[in-house]
Picture 1: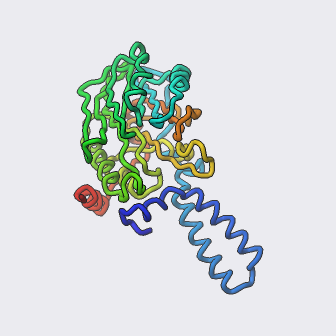
Picture 2: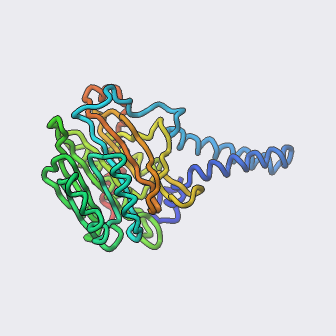
Picture 3: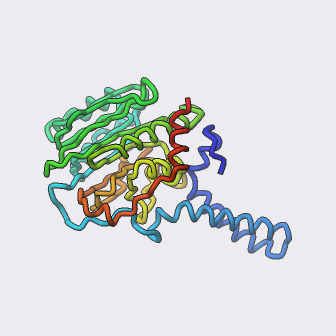
Length: 328
């Protein structure tokens, strides 16, 4: 509830599901062992309030909620785009597993983050099938590579916040000829060993939100945002950008941490503008990273904009976004 940028406050946005489970267990424990105890009753009321609040935050990402993006009305077509997002974990050496994954799901676009020169060399054989590429290999775990079957136009590598943390902005030309603006991000997480504040992460996310809103063509935003789907920053991003989350009404699709089932959060995101429909969304098998890859297929379908549930920013939201962008 405390919206301070310091990591000790922001890190507790991540384990909503874990807190929901622990709260539910504690409610049952209190009902069984302290049913008539005065202190137990007070604690029970507080726990139930907390439980309701947590449910409010996570229910939009379950099948009990309305789907924010409707299902594609056509099975395939020249306006479809398949995208694979994978945080490979820089020190991971299972590049062959990613080649096998790419072979099996055959995406049109591949975004890989945490890619250094070793990973650039390991994935160089993709050039035949993916002739259009934007590569920014770095040794600081913020390297990024984009591979595309589709033509890429006007590719830009931007350093929006820090000189060593890149992002990509590019127009993608679909088979139909339709242009789509794609933004690829991987901002710093708010953790002590990386950055003790979320200020820079939030600022980068919201800067891209403003760019997405100003775009005259359809927009996709993809990457490891180091923020959970239900955080207030991600909610603000969606309101400012007008973009939609395909997970809403379909599931959590927790992508991190791949090696600890009890500590999993939806950190890897793919957002789209309201003129897309969703054909498929999957969490793919682990390839040795601490992140699961995420695979999605969208279809550009302009009439869907009148059906999809776009969130609208209030004046207060816009003021908050400008305030966070202005922070240093």
